[in-house]
Image 1 (cartoon, helix red, strand yellow):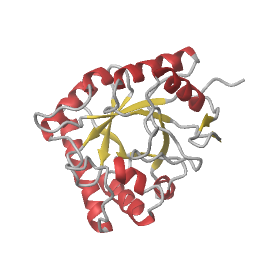
Image 2 (cartoon, rainbow, N blue to C red):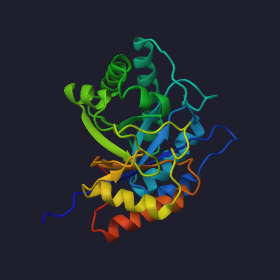
Image 3 (cartoon, rainbow, N blue to C red):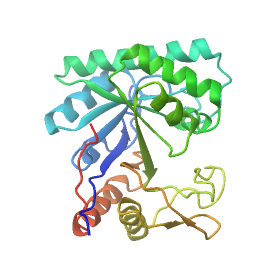
Image 4 (cartoon, one colour):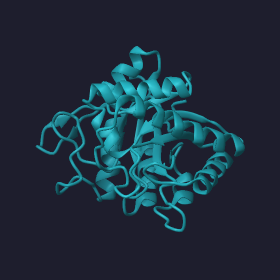
Length: 255
């Protein structure tokens, strides 16, 4: 039997704004291998972005740009019918801002991961998916992108020559179609730490997990995400990392 392939562990970080703080960035940076840093549109501000980049660089954590809709009030979790050309420039703007701050912190942005409603929209929304891909290409054709397996976004990105990295969510429930259960529905966010850790080991080793309808779902991600704003996120991330180690699964950045 071949050895398990390495899996990345990422988290959404820097999602505070000004004096308002959300999540334990420092605690998560002690556990994860990649940091999805909010770029100021759905959350985050220059000082927060710089601080997270410095902390990530000090720990050798890879930095990614978490781009989203321009929606601070809704935390980027509301779909916006943005013109494709505008969405492309929004992506370039966000990646460019974080790239400058990461450079000042002695590091660099290595990948792009959409956030919230944008992430979910470009699973099937071809026009917005293509617009995001164009934005990534303009910001840097050497950047990787992270998204839902089977999404229009990853398909278009791969066709454009970008490295497309499929991910799965440690703390979210899935539909039978492999999409995330809406946060508006009960049970969409998982909280049982042991259950989450066991699901992550299963996904990382090619085993199925149970979808919301009780069926068996295969995902096989290259990266696993723990939401920074989930209650107990640091505890969850630590449990996932320990469970992966106990299962013999290496944890390492994908880029």
